[in-house]
Structures are given as C-alpha cells and as structure tokens.
Image 1 (cartoon, one colour):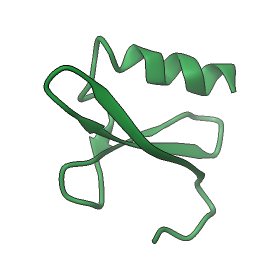
Image 2: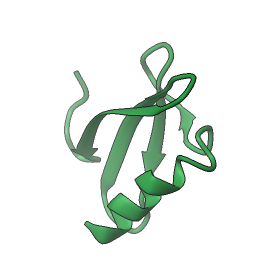
Image 3: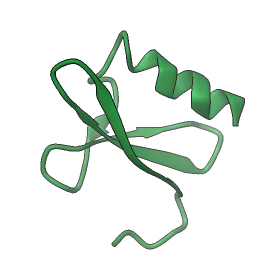
Image 4: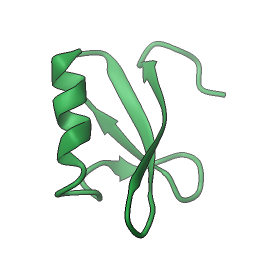
Length: 60
C-alpha cells in the first residue's frame, strides 16, 4: 500500500501521468507489479481520487 500512496502523492507534481480514463474527464494510474488502478480527476488546484480498485474487478 505504500507504493500506491507514494504514486498518488506524486500526482501533485505530474497530474497527467496516468492514462486517459474510461469516463470523461478522468485518468487512470496503475501500480505495476501491483494489480491496483486508481481513477482520478485533475482539478485546477487539486487531484480528486475517485476510486482505487483491483484490476480484476469488473468496472461499473
């Protein structure tokens, strides 16, 4: 979980490093070799993490 937290913290400096998400206006950040994906949105002054899910989960 520390790797996930550190990667999310790094979004402060590189907010667009994740790939474009499936929902409009979102981005997705993966954490190889961990199977987790964070879905987030970039706002003017902040990063909003919408969800963190396991890569094997079905997406809504």
